[in-house]
Amino acid sequence: MRLTTTTKRFVVTLVGLSACALLASGCGLRSASGTVLTAEPGTIKAYPELEGQPLTVAAKDFTEQLVLGNMMSTALSTAGFDVTNLSNTPGSFGVRQAVIKGDVDISPEYTGTGWINYLGNTKPIKGEKAQYDAVYEADLKNGLTWLPPAPMNNTYAFAIAEAKGEELGITKLSQLKDLPKDELTFCVEAEFASRNDGFQPMLKTYGLSNSTIAKATNLDTGVIYTATAAGKPCNFGEVFTTDGRIPGLKLRVLEDDKQFFPLYNLTEVVRTDTLEKFPEIADVFAPINEKLTNEVMLDLNAKVDVEGEDPAIVARDWLVQEGFVTEG
Image 1 (tube, rainbow, N blue to C red):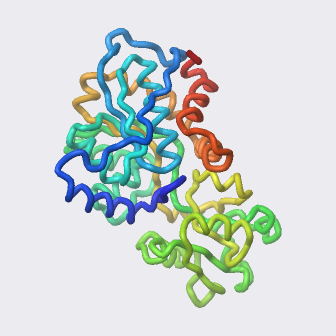
Image 2 (image 1 turned 90 degrees about the horizontal axis):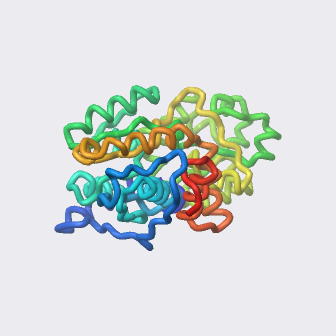
Image 3 (image 1 turned 90 degrees about the vertical axis):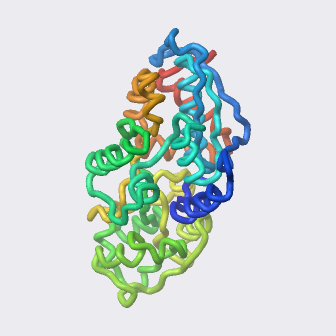
């Protein structure tokens, strides 16, 4: 995906894998602050048997994961755990290997990342439940348990400026082939342009090719959002569906109506031995996951990336707003 609201899935994970091979332990684990914002019980109750039990949370180093890692830390602390918060850990594989090794107990993760990046499968599985079931079963042998996922799906997408989308009357990718060629201008990351689930296969799925579009321009992730909002040099930009810049820049995400892109539903990955020791963890996160939709995550990410709020405060405020915790 990307380094701020999303992560460049393959680039970051490959860098993280190389780093892990060079480090004897820890795999770069660190946190920007390590702070756990505390709260009082709401619908998340305090479990006397969990009081003071140590638990380590790790999350990656981009906005969404910072929000989620802090959200998990506050929720688990409210339940009674003595939480070490390692949100802001560099690299997907850094977090992954730390959980496998037992340096970390739990982390926020995405089903598509688990299936494709970590488990090495080249083809995603259609359907949220089928994709979740597959990664759940496959990772049990690694001593990891994936909790039931949220509806939130942080996957690839294409967006257009809202005003331009209104002008063209376009809301879904299948409508692209009906537009005039000179309107078919795209901005994509260089890595996405060459992926087997990237730009060229997407064009083919939706009845297009290099010869039927006007042009495609390779840009860095952050630049794509502003270029798409401006309509120069492209009408359509590669985005990630829960990126806070989407509402901030008034972009319209086009529906992937042929379900081309892989599913990246969010959930928590827990060491199986930790979950067996503390089954209450699943009870803490089940109602939270039910509430985490794309719309919710877009709003939370925008509070950080657009409004400049602290991700830990954004996370706790949302837990308070939803009644999961109360202010201490």
